[in-house]
Image (cartoon, rainbow, N blue to C red; front, side, top):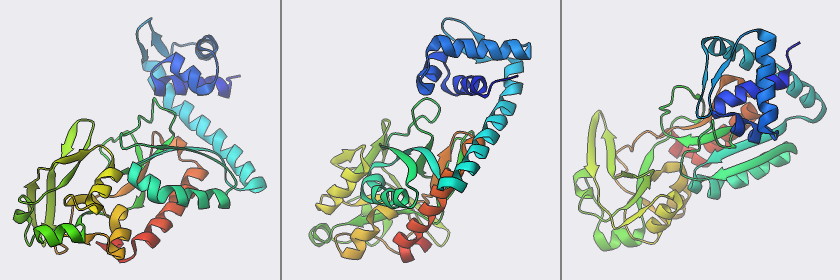
Length: 304
């Protein structure tokens, strides 16, 4: 009879791209992982993985079997979770990656509340504006801004009606003036964000079907979204931030929305999972929880 633990080793090996990394994630030795895959291959009578000292790839039979293995593991996990929910409610480990500014200033407190509601959940939180590799890093799900570009990932919507927002401090606008058109932005100081070597200095604005793009230059550039917000609060320039990161500053008067008649670039917030089989009840529970918190936090700005 095929062992579910052997199936798990096989699926993890494919996801991680190596037996040694799969073994590390499963807290077993590489030798034990290799034996598990060989045992599974022996029971099926086919080779699932073509292995060499430097590479590992799925065989044709392995690729055909992979989906069935995922479905079987997913069904087992769902069954275990259904039993646990009857006893304790949501439980298990949530390994979550999130952007720095949103993570530090909002998500941490929200997750504390989520944990109080579901005390048997274990939270592992990674805050970094670099996109975590969901197949190779110890992360199961990721909160990310922007329209998903990787079709291999499952996107669970959290905040769909969400955009970037131009903002600056009252002191900056008093000193340098308030731009009245997108074209006037180019003459202003800006604080810019970069990730993985890409500088996000092309600012797109829309109004009644018209779209304008402005190329900005700035003396302040950071790969951390929270630093960009702090620079804007310090009066160092105009920022183009995720609205959810700055609406509280705007409501409190610490920042002022610039060009409010123009819409910033669409920036939906999603929970991303590597596979549909990993969309567990605890992930769905977190999605529902975050949807409500985001709606409450955004208020009227959520309709922008």
